Length: 368
Ligand code: MG
Image (cartoon, rainbow, N blue to C red):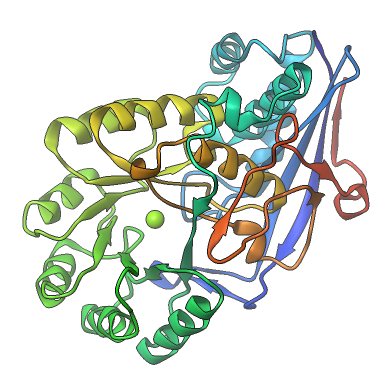
């Protein structure tokens, strides 16, 4: 099988809540997502999606996706989309770095592999280890009382895991945010305080001392790995690394230093499902649980997350994300829909989705 044509579509995904705010004053009102369609000489088309969390979260941005696709696309024509290891090596040889550009291509090629094998991706990624996957809800950074109110609202929708966006410019207010939300929890709920690199070390040190009596996970307190490791060594609270774990070398370093209990594995941060699966399997072998998700996305990203998460052993899947429930626009049918705080991957071949072409509009890029 050979890749014969690559198309890219730009789609706006407005947020149901109107705005999503996280550390250091960052916010997004409308996400800029890119959907990739890969056509083959066998008549099978695969779909992938990449949606950066704006330009200031990870080293990725929406216009960079399209520029990168224009750069790498011509090198992929004639390649076999079902030979995913070889395809990834080829992508890395013709474009160094830029994992977020390669992610939707890799995702679309997995979709092709699944369709050609007649099997859902969850089977090809390791097998249905779970019936469904438990989701967390991100609580956008607001006042402590507003965030506690959101926890209450989203629990009524079935969520039991809540990730607070902290990392504000006032450590005392972040302590208040964690305390007010913790007061809303019931037995069995999970609370994560995700600073998204927003604290300096002294602020992070104050927060972990200030919430030491609370059952809360601390996620990515500071910008660098070394700063996070320093905080990790000062707190007994369970610890999550996210932004700094961008591939196998950083994972190995973290394992060696006992730098975390959990990692946040984002598909596009590491370059696609092929590399995410490799990291997932290494984490399972080494006893590290994971939140499996992406930077953001719509129905196609949510489907990919569901397949990777559902093929992960339950005790290693800390949580996952149903991004399609945060945005107002549907871009595909067949994507998982949350029920009682959980989602279920499709059992149809590949990703199990059909894009809604009217929602995608005309392609912004056609290669081949
Ligand atoms: Mg995070």
